[in-house]
Amino acid sequence: MKPDFTNTQLLTQYLDGELTPESAGQLQQRINTDKDLEEELENLKISLEAVKSFGLRGRVSAIHTGMMKEVQQQTLPKKGKIRNLTWYSLRIAAAVLIIAGSAIFYQYITLSSTSLYEKNFSSYTLHENRGADNKSVLQAAYESANYTAAINSFEKTPIKNTQDYFLAGNAYLYLDKPSDAIQCFLAIQQLNNQQQTHQYTDDAEYYLAMSYLKNNEPAKALLLFEQIHTDKNHLYNSKVSSWFLQKIKWVK
Image 1 (cartoon, rainbow, N blue to C red):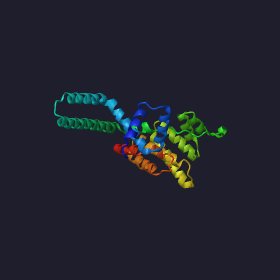
Image 2 (cartoon, rainbow, N blue to C red):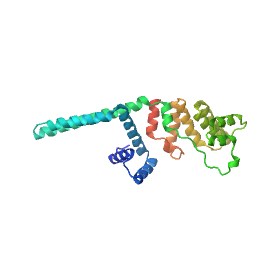
Image 3 (cartoon, rainbow, N blue to C red):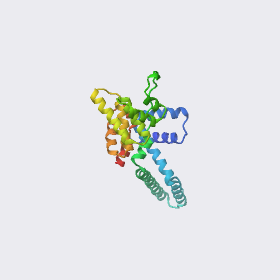
Image 4 (cartoon, rainbow, N blue to C red):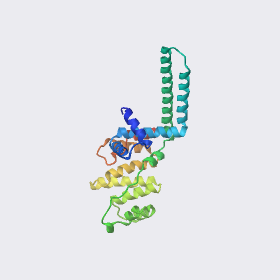
């Protein structure tokens, strides 16, 4: 990703709530379609999180204030003063680099499969179905967020279809049972292979990867997320950025 100061300044204003609603909306549209911009926004968020956690904002201000006082007190000749200002600028740059390193280190030590899952998981919402009378007990329970009832219905269903496995997999995730969710999403892949169908193919692949994260299996999750990231036509391609993959690699 090529650094772009204009983008960085704009993203900073976006995070600080300084943009007008119209400008913020336009920027959000760009973020949704530009992975590099999305990664830069993620990096800025991480830096801000580190600043808050380590209290670095005060340190940056103190460093800058102290150096400027020293510069103002200098009585060197003109050329010497310019050289001295350059030296102080380098010291400030070095301090900023140290702080940036602290942000990355903070992100590294706080990463885990669970934290990545919790920050990136988004619940699956069924598309509106006008034939409400045709809903299965499992589907009705899932839509009402009664995940225990959904699982009970799933386990009592003798012949399960692709949607049954998919909804049950998501219900298991909500109930903190990722290993059971994994089996459901794998069953979908097996069913599609046997029947030569493509029902919930992309959905099952993405949520299987999320289940692996939840189950503390980052290596398996990484393989799937890399496939999704490479496939531009994948339904969940926009959810898997290069920065997200890098964080999984750190965990792995």
